[in-house]
Image 1 (tube, helix red, strand yellow):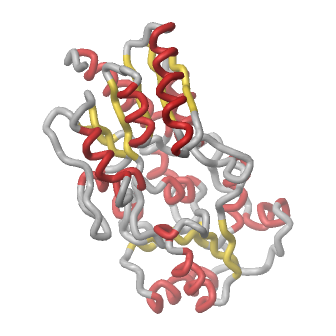
Image 2 (cartoon, helix red, strand yellow):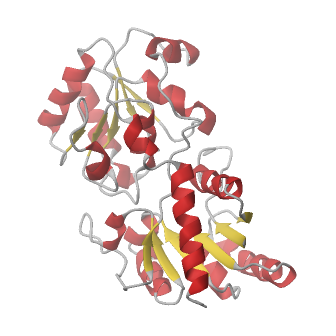
Length: 316
């Protein structure tokens, strides 16, 4: 099987981690024996028409069995270029955004398979509608965590490697503080009230993210919504406690885990829980087995199965 994967969320110097989850899935699909090419272009209005032309040229010169786009606007570019059969995985903001969301829902009616990075994307969240459910034309296809990069490490060693004070209590907000839906304001309030230094993501090299997670006493996921919630899963792969709003996969993977919390945001309750973790010498949560169930390798197997089923149905 030969597949073209299309993505408009590639890394740049300011955000080197952007889109790494798609690259991880492509690499896992290749390891599984599929022939997969990756076409990446940068977001922005001026890039969409050139991308359509480039994808059309690629489709005209190479024989692909199937095209798989990640994110709604990349899906539209593939569709306008003549991609058939076309699968699109929607990741979150492309569904919840007030402008892009309606475009994504319109696109979902014109493709062979509509996939969400989590089941949450097929329902409303934070007052924002999700994708429509159509029997036989929906799937949940996460990218999963690359467990070769994320694993438990000694917390003191991680802090020293990053040039941090090994004794200072730290909480980690694993997103770009400038993204309003991630709610950095909440994380800052929790850290201030709990008496911890707050570390933030946004420009961390993907190969160093495991160090930052292991350096923290706990990870704060304060988002209004998440398409999947990969940071939560990567934290669990490191056995690092997670405090999260019930978004994306958090309710599924955090339920019943000691030293982790999945609950609606409430400053006093969250701060008290974080303070309890900070009072422990080396707080950990037994999360890696749950991360393993949603690893990049296992999720790639699910994606390959969806490819085969789509082709067997003769979808165009």
